Image (cartoon, helix red, strand yellow):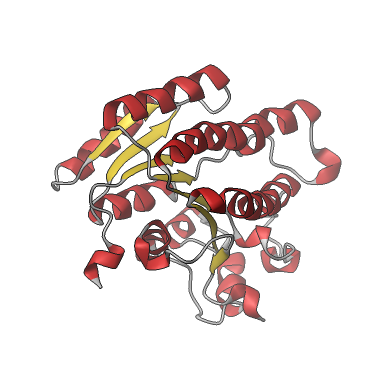
Length: 263
């Protein structure tokens, strides 16, 4: 059973790997035995975070990657391939929140800028990595979505806090789920799997919601398990989807939401 969940000798890329969800995802893959490459525009931040994981004896390094720049994407993938010889796992976790807004207030320039990462960047990094995976005859794509890509936003949950769910986020995350299924169906014949993990509310972010207690209480009340997710709640599903424990699973959207979408 331990071997099924082991990622020993696997090479994994995590975009946005030192951020909100990225940090526990990168840590989990390393703890399961993978050589993890943490990538974002801030190469220094990536390497700094990678260093904290390496201190614990795991295999991690940080690299620069600009998902708005096609040349950066191509160069990055080539560098990883040259350095490690293969790419087994790609976790598409990076997201741009620039210009997030409701529909009537959204600005064209901000929308397009965010889409260069959330749509075009997602496509281009996956395209580059898929080429490597086809050559080696195996691979695993994991897209990090959201419950906003499975159900419509529950606007009343925000109450009088002034918080909302931006139209950009719902658009991007629903598109990610569809893209995941397309990848799974098209590339299954090459022994490449693709799945989506869609988390719900995330506990570490709650500490930033000072003065937003109404939302916090509403969210807990509307979640069957009555709480937000913590780091371990995302780490387990990521290792499962990245490992041979899920070898016969592809094209799926795994909801990690404490039951939010089950009502």
